[in-house]
Image (cartoon, rainbow, N blue to C red; front, top):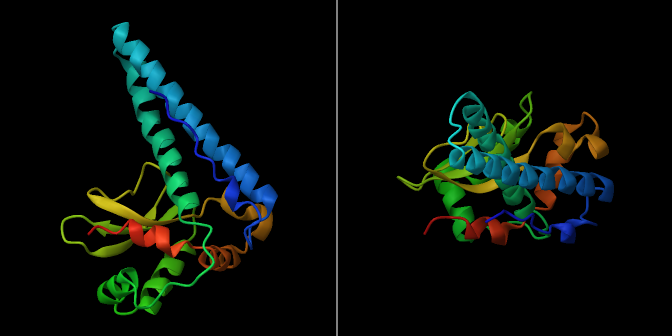
Length: 192
């Protein structure tokens, strides 16, 4: 069963993100879906042809990059499109305050992680062993994803996510990202 690219075109017109930036980003995402399918098909053919060896290992390694690129983009686009601020009486706001000391301290930490030098992702994750929320830097797609944690909020900080609109002004992009978080989607990702 092949993966299909999800349609995020409803985000076009979102404040702080040009249509050009979003459409280019959607095209990049679709490439991850395509390459995930190609890698899986190639691996299947190698298995059926009994060609397990060096090439198999390299395609298998590449699968992690392509698959995580697909999934992280789906999470990222999926948590955009909101217009409301986080309801401070919501379950999510209370959990952020409990685990970080306050919503403001969580936001400060999340933005600081996003402003770090380098390419990658910022993710608010929930540890499935104790429920604790933690902000993580994800370097590349397949390096830094915390094992045993559930992604709650994902922000892309690869240059393609902001350079078209913000050039080197990553903090301005981060501010635009925060104006467009769909908190209802983010809260649904919390473990019960």
